[in-house]
Length: 262
Image (cartoon, rainbow, N blue to C red):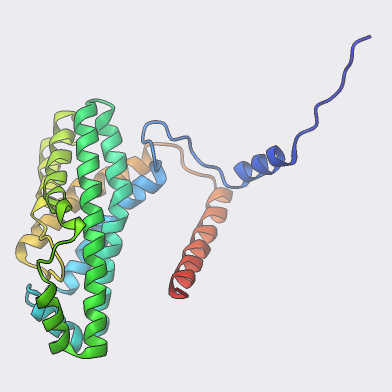
């Protein structure tokens, strides 16, 4: 007599199936980590946020004593400018990962080294942003003269991230060359992306005309590609959007509160 027992779904598989149905996620195929939506969104927002931050601090002289003095006079403006720039720089890692994956699908070497160098350079910029924040807090607590003296005393001191300063410059050139050689980007947009290497390196760096040229190149190289990436696949349904957007906003709010709590 044939045994016709029915297998019962485990609680884990049932919960997983419900989550996948409620919050669908596309497979990481052509774009790899972090996927089309995160990668495309970061390509659009990252360069624009960095450009906005650079424009806000453009009226003030480039070097660090003037940046600290500007923070003393306009703390909200300067904090916003540096915050936007740091947020945009952080958002570039998914953009670089997706771009490197596209390049690597046609030339593994260019994709590997372009992506690795750019992301190591972004780590260095995150370190610089932390030093910027600390210097501004010294202005608030000790005054601009004491903060300037502290920055002067430590300027040029050795730290492990100094080894990545070269990656900040070289990474965008390698990534742009790879995008051009593999035809991921056309020659003009690849050249524009390569201009990002001209963005100044270091702590408390203000905005120069060359900074704006470099960031305009970054926008020209990544923003159209990001928009095309977002449009090239199927759009999510209304239910998925109405679930993902509030969840993302709540998660960001919780992360901010947890970060402020220490």
